[in-house]
Length: 489
Image 1 (cartoon, rainbow, N blue to C red):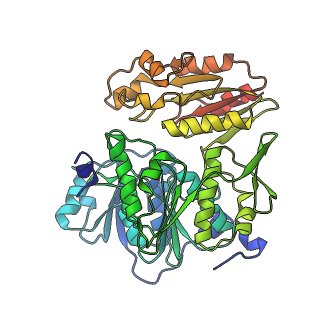
Image 2 (cartoon, rainbow, N blue to C red; image 1 turned 135 degrees about the horizontal axis):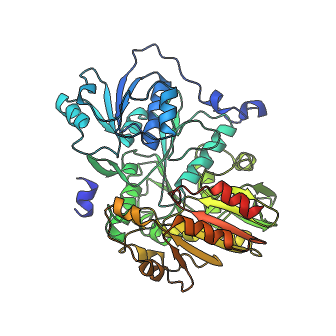
Image 3 (cartoon, helix red, strand yellow; image 1 turned 180 degrees about the vertical axis):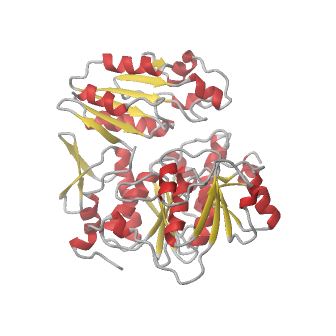
């Protein structure tokens, strides 16, 4: 039964030279003697889809693709690999009987002519998660799930494994420092680390992605209602994580945030054949804006990330790495050089008395965690924080009350949204007063014009003050680097 139907219906540590592999060395293409697969990707221009296309090409497959619009960086990257379609649009003639597989992305619609042709020919049709599972059937699968933190946890695990020269494959939803692709599929890696998104798999497969990977080791970093357009109630959303938890197999491991109230409801140790491991924030101290982890000997390990949510992410990654044979001392050795995931509390610019960070945060729990983290890291500095409402859920009046008191940490709180985005998403107009009321903060400022937003930020007093910009969008193309340079200068 479809989910929506249910819903509404070692290489152990090597020497230092090996542990510092460059990304190109670490991702060297394999040599294949067998006839190469012929694979077509529908909606190849998507972020994860074009990375899959590049990974398959690197593996030796004959790859073609199509899309009705392809933007940078996907366009340039596909072109450089010789995979950019000759023209944009869909063409049923490109679906031929000799194709070994057709992979369809979420951007395609159920009536896509290429998809219909593939169905007519009886070809093997996969969603992205289905194909990743098929490509990793013989590997140990580690799936990182949760409403927040999964990209950072996945990135941390990959960093530690690569530092110690381990062989692994991966599929992650963001570009990571030191990795030139977001997907890697090889024949010889014994494990694969997968960021397990709870969103739908494809236009014709309405199951959450992380249900399809069939994990051996699963992580739930926390549960906070999201994707209201697919999961209309909090209970319905939580149920998807319960299904994921229950899918943990005999002799499998489920690692979960033991302090998250919603996770506690579903990560209950009920299966005697499963190992349940709860985690909390790693022990630490903060001095002069720097965070230090404490190991068992109370020795301090300086790290490049901060905030309680990141300390929880590190704990989750440490538990996974322990299951994969990485000892504690080796984990600490690697974690010191972990830069964090892109757009996750990413430093834009630093000055003598101010810093500017950007973050992918948009859901209520992410917003609260990120703003609180920056305020605690620099308690003596004033914090100005700006959130862009950009997702379907965040712009939906029915969901907005979830933001109540999630933006209390900053000294100055600003919410921005573009009314044209509402039109594009076919949502009704959203009064600024409705947004302000939802946050339950009387002094919150709501702005709907990007020029006005930029002017407001430039007018602030930036001596001994920090700026945090949070969005899954771009603030309508605002040049954040230029703004940050002015602020910190």
